[in-house]
Image 1: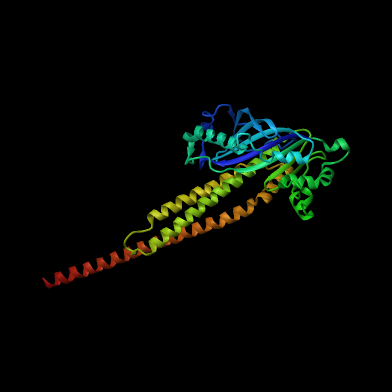
Image 2: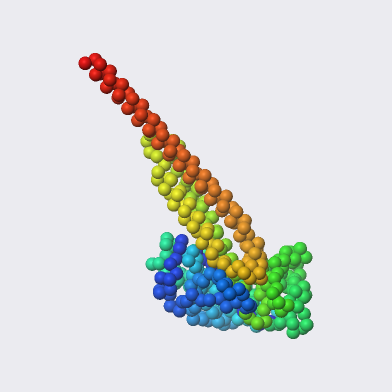
Length: 368
């Protein structure tokens, strides 16, 4: 069994990054066109992140010395996706499981190498980033096993027939279950449920933490891009959720403090300003997040992306965040209404005072 293992790591490093300017600070960077593995519509709207290629490095592991090819993509929404690629040649699925997250001889992990590359990119693009983070943070990791040999057609089988024969082993590989025979039929079927084929010789199986790509041609760039983009979306949605929680907590505290003030002393102007800024930022972020998956026009890739959305629960994340955003919008409207009511009270008091002054003036003039 031959192929390569692709380790994907998604980092959130800023609110926004100016990619044209950032490209001047990153050596060996380019806005790379994705080469699709099949004919697509003429005006294929692929989003183009800034691609960075680094020299390969060698690491010592229990499996021997591995050559790690390093790539990264910088996205305008402030995300960095690091891709580490390691070739393999193993007798079977059992030995392939060791590549899930190989331990290095120095006690480290490949995660550390990915984090170091993300940190390097963050420092380079920091001058061109809006609200960059203090550090790279924790990544969302995803492992893709790309198998090029054996080819199903070599034994007169289709990719779907191959999956049916090796379904238990594939499920064990994706779930990191060494004793795959222990897996129930229900678990095996659920793990391998999201399976897609374009030809009789290729196959993609997506689970929540890993995926298997079987393609003898080795043309996996477009599929890897979909997996990479969906993984980055998950990371950004998690950051989005954390920011919304903090914003809502602060809004509730501000609302509680404001509610005990006298109407004529201190308005919610500062609170409204913060809420309005948060609403604008989050709405803009939500719209830009969808731009990184502009690959409409290809049914197969669209199916792959929908499979990723299901496995990563992206729709559930989006619905939950939409509800929180609605609550934030409701707080903004409530405070805005309170501010308008305060202004009306002040105006009414001023009108009453003017009447009193006018009456007093008339009374004093009459006495003279």
